[in-house]
Image (cartoon, rainbow, N blue to C red; front, side):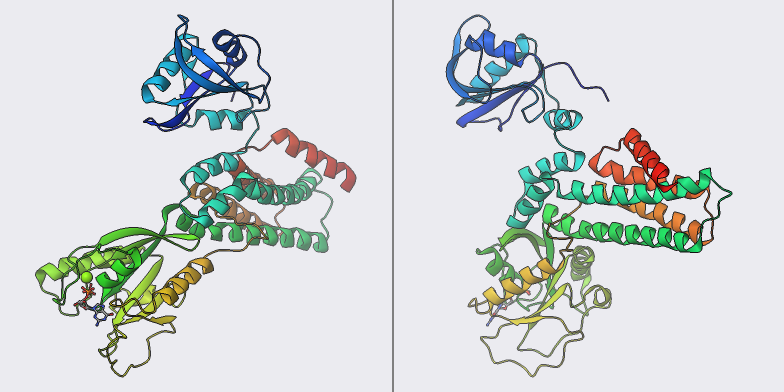
Length: 450
Ligand SMILES: Nc1nc2c(ncn2[C@@H]2O[C@H](COP(=O)(O)OP(=O)(O)O)[C@@H](O)[C@H]2O)c(=O)[nH]1
Ligand SMILES: [Mg+2]
C-alpha cells in the first residue's frame, strides 16, 4: 500500500446547526492553505483566530484554526483544522472552497486509514477510534480507550514474538534435517505451542464480551402470561413503554428498549407470555418469543410468586443456565404461594413491578451477570471484535494442525507453513506483519542457537 499524496478534506462534526463545526484537511497542501487563506505562516499546534476568506477574497466566517506539521498529527500528515460557526451552509462553503483550492473530499474512514498507513495507529487502534465514537456505556468506553492505547496490539506482539521463537526452532531443524532433535527439545516446542493455543483461546473468549459492549447486552424478559413482564420492562425503562393489563396475552409481539445500568448498556426485550396451551395467534407470538430468546445474552425469567412455579418451555430450558438467567419472583406485594425449588440454581431476586420493591437488587444482579462475561487478560480490558475473532480462529486452526504434526514427530515444512499461516493471522489483527523483521529474527536466533 502506497502512502497517498493528495490532500483530503471533510467535516469532522455532524452536518447540522450547532455552536461550532470542525472542518479538517490532511495532506501536503495544508501549509499552503494556511498561507493562502489566513496569510503568513503558522506555528504548529497553536490555535489562531482569523477571517476565513474564500478564493475570491470574500469573508466566509470568523474562525479558529490549528495547523499540525507532519508527522505530529492524527494522520501523520500535515493537517489543518478549522473551527467555524456551526452553520451547515458555512461549513459547506468552506469545504467547497478547500476543494476549489485543490483538496479532495475524503472518503469514509480515510483519515484513520492514513493514520494507519503512516504508522500512527495499528489496525486495532484504528478500530478503537470507531469504538470510541460509538461507545454507549462506561465499560464500552473503557475497553475502546484501552484498545486505542494499544492493549490488544501489545497482546498480539507478545503472541507474535512467542510464535516467531517456535518457528525459528522448527526452521532450524528443517534446514538441518540430519541433526536429530532431542526429545526434550521437541517437548519444549510442543509446550510452547500449547501455551500459544491457550493464549489464543483466551483472547478469543473475549469476543462475546466485545459483542456485548458494542451491540448492547440482549436481555430477554420471559415468563408465563400475566407474570408481570411488561410491568417489569416499564420499571426498567422508567416509563410506560409497554401496555400492561390484567388480561393475559396483552403483549402479542416483542418490544425493545435500550437502557444503561451501571457501566453497561442493555437491550431489554419484552416478550409475549409462554403459554403451554396457546391459541393460533398466541402460537405465532410464542414463536417470536423463542426467536428472541434464541440469541439472548441474559434471561430474566419472570415468575408470578402468587402462583405455583411454572415449568420452563423445553425449547428454552437447555439455553438457560445460572450463568445467564435470573429468576425474578414478581408480585411480592401480594401473599405468595408456596414455592418449590427452581429447576436450576439460578440467581433469584424478589420484586414488585407494581411498587418498585427489589428493583435495585435486580439491577445489581443483572450488572453482576454482565460483569461475569468479561474475560480477564492481565489488567487490561480486552474485548475483541468479529474481525479479530476471525483471525484468531484461523490462527487457532493452524496452531492445532502444527501441533498434531509435531506430536507425530513430523518436523517438516508443513509444520513451518502452518506456523507461518498462524503468524499471518496474528499479524492481521494489528494489520502489520513485517516479513523482513520476521526473517531478521529468524536469522538472529538461528545464529545464536547454532
Ligand atoms: N400486585 C401486583 N400486580 C402486578 C405486579 N406486576 C404486574 N402486576 C399486574 O399483573 C397483570 C399483568 O401484568 P403485565 O405486566 O401485563 O404482565 P405480562 O403479561 O407478563 O406482560 C397486570 O394487571 C399488572 O398490573 C406486581 O408486582 N404486583
Ligand atoms: Mg406483557
